[in-house]
Image (tube, rainbow, N blue to C red; front, side):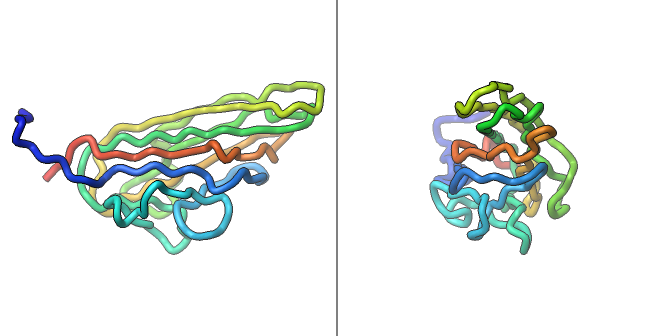
Length: 169
């Protein structure tokens, strides 16, 4: 039971947006830290918000407090040719403290339209996951674009939101 006397912490929530639109071929993990594109620019530092970077590769988002969290990954892709991607995908991946895990917790897919013109065509997919994370658990944010246009651009509108629903002892 939650009463009026409960004090919520002033952290354990954060949102990040890709630093720039980025062309990459096929599959790609997005960096949660560092200066190698494509990386997320956070609305606060990970440490100020109660999170951390989980590996030297900067792909892993690290939880520092055990609790039930909501994680949303929203991927926007674009392409400017007639051979737009058949499918674009995003996934939240994690398996305990395994670095750069390939275990998909949630995923979503869309298609970039096949327009025979020089206009910019978009595809967008969103996935979310609600679950228990222990302190030191890791997740990563993965993207994919399939043939014939594996080079679909990960648009700078791509973003991630993570927030604590309830701490667990």
